[in-house]
Amino acid sequence: MILEVPKHTIRTHLAPLPIGPYSQGIVAGNTLYTAGQIPLDPATGQLVEGDIRVQTARVLANLEAILDAAGFRMADVVKATIFLADMGDFAAMNAVYGATFAEPFPVRSTVQAARLPAGALLEIDLVAVRD
Image 1: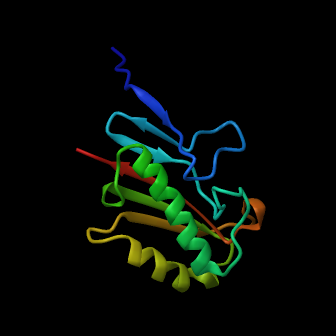
Image 2: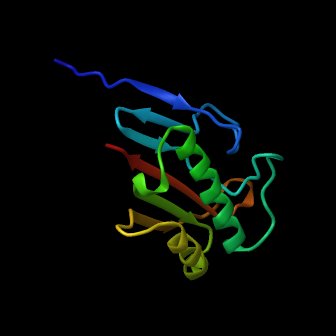
């Protein structure tokens, strides 16, 4: 017997709208999976100008908007994957990231990517679970 889990897409204008064949987020059961977010301003669709701190704050704001649209909170996040264009930006990114989440912190993977969309300095995707 195959058990099908109901799923639905999340779409909010408070985060950058998809520019390809993907969803901002998918809720499957009690779990939300977000698409990777880069530091695009949802109002203009343009990459925000600034250093890794500015770009990290924008990415996390975009992700929080997707979480909120799905009825989740940052406290529901259990997993984050971070792609950095330059691992030398890790400490500055981590300072902004660390101020956004509280204990128990989500598990996390951070890798350096050869190239990210639109020349972004980072991309982050999340997995969140709610009771």
